[in-house]
Structures are given as structure tokens and as C-alpha cells.
Image 1 (tube, rainbow, N blue to C red):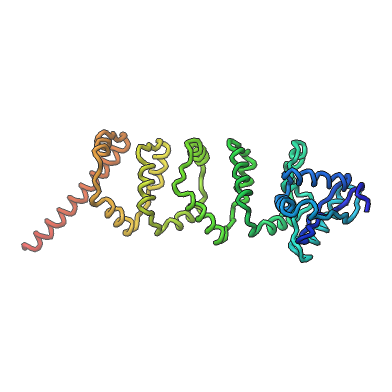
Image 2: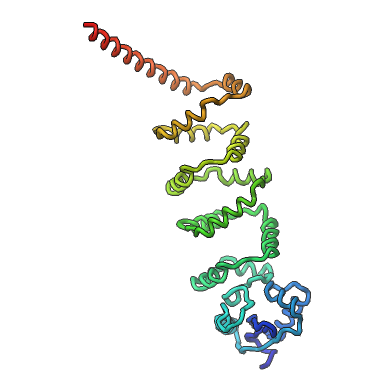
Length: 330
């Protein structure tokens, strides 16, 4: 077939039989030259094809024209048909394509104009399903993970728009992670033990949390997850050190006080709090802070009212006992 025409082509590994399906809307020969240039420099957009090229060399691959087509939609339709033909090892060979969707731009370096066109593009449910199925269970190499990490570090300081944050939040609603995913996340966090975020990262995390209101469902889930959980001595020591010298704002104190109103602690919780206080010796600095602490007029009024109520109850009990003793004496 004529390589000067547009259409769909195939790059085949002569040693393993693995294939790469591509297309060009201008000239297949020109696209082949772009592939060869990137592979020869070790800068090809497809890491799977690049690694195979590095192993077997230029003579280990054959280039074939699969089909000619004219126009963008026709070329993409042909490419998609051939990708579906080879994808997932359906023909008994591996497929180097990184994405099951034609014209997915996976791994390509797009120009600013192309990125501007792609912005706001919405994939069809079928395409999203194919992308999800392709990535499920895929294990990225250490080199790929290192590149992704470096790319994310380069995006530091980027602030999502309110619309983007709303979309991310809406996408997470009702999403349930599988046990395998939770296990992987837990293992990843354990591997980062001892990792301390930078002051800038901590400041960003605090700023992101300010004014954030969790739904009742989220609060219920967090409470259920924390119930019965016992922190290790190391974790308790870290939490105590983090709280040392920390002063809550008046707004935070007001919120904390409001959440405690009407709250009744279970006997088990009261027993744990009492056991934790028992034998606890406060440092001279903590005692000095308590002595120097001045309650607000409202707090003093509440303390006074509580003290009067306790005195009234004690007097009632004393009167009851005196009356009982008088009855017994008679």
C-alpha cells in the first residue's frame, strides 16, 4: 500500500509478535519517520515500545500499512477498529498501545494549542470504561512512578478552580474503595512513617481544611472507624507533641464547646478518661499556665451557676438524711 497516503499502520516486533497500532491523517511515511526519530533518541512517547526497541534494535521491527482512510473521523474509526482487534492479546500477541481508545494522546507531548482544544473535552462512557479496564491491575515500573512524582512536584502551587474542586468532590461522593485499594494505601502510608511534611505543605493542608464542613455521613463513618481503635505509644507521643503550645482560636473553641453541649459520654469512655487522669502528673509549666489562665465572664458565670447547683443538691441530700435519722430516732 502507498505510505504517502493517510491511514492506519502497524509496528510489529519480529521476535515476540507484539504490535503497536497507529494512524496518520497526513502521511503514514511521515508518521513512521517521527516514530523512528523518537525511538532512536530514546524519547518515544510509548515506554513499552521504547524498551522493546532498546532491546531488539531497529532490525527487530517491521512496519505495515493496515488500511487507508481520508478525513479525521474516518481515520480514527479505522484505528479504533484495529486497536480493538489487537487489544488485550485477542490475536495471541501483546499490544504496545498504552490506551484502548484511538487518539487518546497517551504519552504524547501536546502543543499549547492542542492542550487548549482538549480542555473541557468529555470522554464517552464507553471510552472511560475502556480506559479504566486498561489501567486496572496495571503495575507501573519504578521509572514511571519516579517520572510521575517529578511531574507532580513541578505542579506545586497549582490551585484548582472552584468548579474543578466541585467536580472532584462530586466524583468522590459514594465512591467505595475496594479492600485491595485500602490495603495498598495503608501499606504506602506505613512506608512513609517518619516522613514529616514541610512547613509549606502543613500550611496548605491547614488552609485547605479551614471552613470545610463534613457531611453527617462522613462524620459517622469517621467515628465508626475510630471506635475501638487504640493508638500506639509512638502515635500518642507524636499527637501530644503536636498539640504542645498549640492555641485554638476563639472560633474553634466556640465550635468545640457547641459540639459538647448535650453530649453524654458512655460509662466506658468516662472510665477510660478517669484511668488516664489517675496518676498523671502535670509539669510545672502546665500548672503555671493553669494558674495564670483567666476565665471569661461567661465562663465564670457558668462555673458559678454549676457550683450553686451542686451546693443545692448537697443541701437537699443532707436534709433528706437528717429527716431519715429523725424518723429512725422516733
